[in-house]
Length: 471
Image (cartoon, rainbow, N blue to C red; front, side):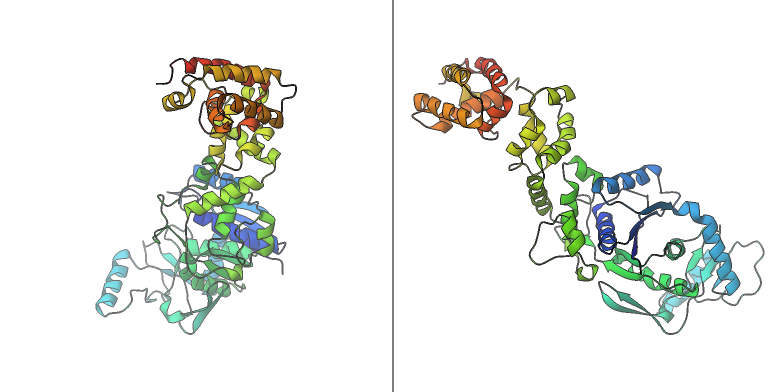
């Protein structure tokens, strides 16, 4: 049997990390079995669904590399098919028209509450033969009243639902539009979905959907209901915890593979391994191994994983990812192409940065000469250091070769002459002079990438920062 999974978001808001994890688990299960991953947009909520939300979902999945094999299918384009199935169910007697008014239903529920019963539809229209004039009925599914519906859940195990507790579900509203639970059933049937992987907040819908599928003569798919993601405080995940659009993580400088690595570990593990490549996730993930308990979102863990993935990327790939963030930092395309190679810069930065935003901020010094320096750094490192800057310029001009080893030896000579051999005492003033800040990658490597002429120009410009003598 060919494995077919689906991801079916509703375009009523952004694609957040809970939805991404569901998509990831479905995608991994399909890829692991050489199956198909189907994308379906459940856009029947006309008041809340927006084209912008749909576009954001597609963009988010594309950025993450969760490619789909079929779709996207749109439920609003399948209305004729839903009405066709509804008509067949009405004709077969597995569905019926219900003419109860809102007032009648509320009166019924109030009586049940007074009797200590669970409010539920009592099936009073099940055997009605004649329509009520002037009343537009809803359509209800004729649910079985005896026995039980058993869900063999791949995460939670066997779950039993007593059929007498499940009332007759509305599957079409009075205006003729089908409801969520009905559309999902027809879609999963038509698209031959074999495995439905979704959040456990959908678990109570599952027995109803299975019953409808069985009434249609279809074999229900296997279900796996994954637990929710909690915030660090064990409360429901909210925006303050990180439940924001997945595209915001892109803007914050996270790598797609790092975010997927983080999400796959929320509820699943493989021994003590923390860092997974995409290929390893596909090979090792098992939906049956997903934990039953909810997982907590840990932003520090996400940052750590992102740093690990930054360190493991090739220089050309990392340079490609970094470029748009440098443009956002105000470095022009001309500056990027005219000076240091990005592929030469990234090896100096990957050990320190946790995000692409941090890396871009650190990389600016290689493409834009500093025009100012923090007052505290000027006072601490540069005041009274004009002689050192001049000596460094002379030393650097005389170097026969310009590479990190030669520059390091040159710096040591300056330290021997001006700081009793203490390299740090001359390195910090020179670092502030060429980088405009007291923190940078190793100075010899920084100067090597900057180039001799750029280094000399920056030293000359920095002499204006040394005018006020040290107290």
